[in-house]
Image (cartoon, rainbow over all chains, first blue to last red):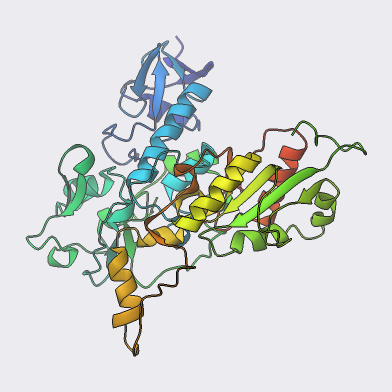
Length: 242
Length: 188
């Protein structure tokens, strides 16, 4: 008997029971855009970039278990239009000024914008006022770029056992906070050795005094589009950013 | 580009206008980076208003290239003049697309900015906030140009490379859908 498989954009993709659509796609080196998904963490399905159409319904590929015979649409103009709109909303809600960002070229948000050919923010930018936290001796927090993926929250809570980060507020006022009475990173036991320091897909958590070691234009997603890097994305582990 | 499409002689040349609003002229410098391709371009286009021609007002044009965002009242007037005279209006570079560097002042109070720069900064003696009536009034916030007028195309980048600008323009002139693939599409 054949192993169970899904039909991903018409292509049979095998899976083992318990795998999600995302797991199966990544194992087959098929790219499904994503931001909050990381193979080492329990999926939470919040960024919605991995939205696919499974048996005619919009679902998050990172949370829905694959089922034998499931027909999944992924790389379609309709889905990519929706994903592009999600990216545009993420861009205008924060301050994503790529030319001044040390993460530019290594940033998954930016790389997905390239991949999905997002040429403009479309919406009116919010230009929120979010002061940076430079209190920590090793690490700079630039909240302007936070996309609320909660990877640092999950890493700090589930791996480091420190619960340094959390999200606070609801709806449009939701934001990343630091678990200290002062609200400052320096007043926590956070360290650069933590897993949480290395999972940010954008440019919020940055090591101080190491900027521009690799010049712009020669960085991870400058060299090769994110859609061609599925194998690396699937193999991401501790100590590797983005 | 109906009338200007194709290479056949005798056809009317495409009229092209450019302007830099709240930008650094880096995108115009990048435009000049198309180097000798400028000659090929000049066979197909005539420049209308542009820093390259020093024409001060935009006539009826086919393509308008706008560098920079909107930081003062004059920027708004120039942008509206371009929109009303250009069939196709293109936002060129990060500042036109999303406000860019000038928009980094948007979370600050404009009055306090002016005070600090012209009155209270160290080494300022007898300073005053410029108030010549010829100076355009700064806006409270800096805006990307798509907030003011309809924009047909966007070329992101800080600046977009000469190659990207050339690819976009030559696609447009040849009647293809302009498209920037990797690595010409970049935001930095």
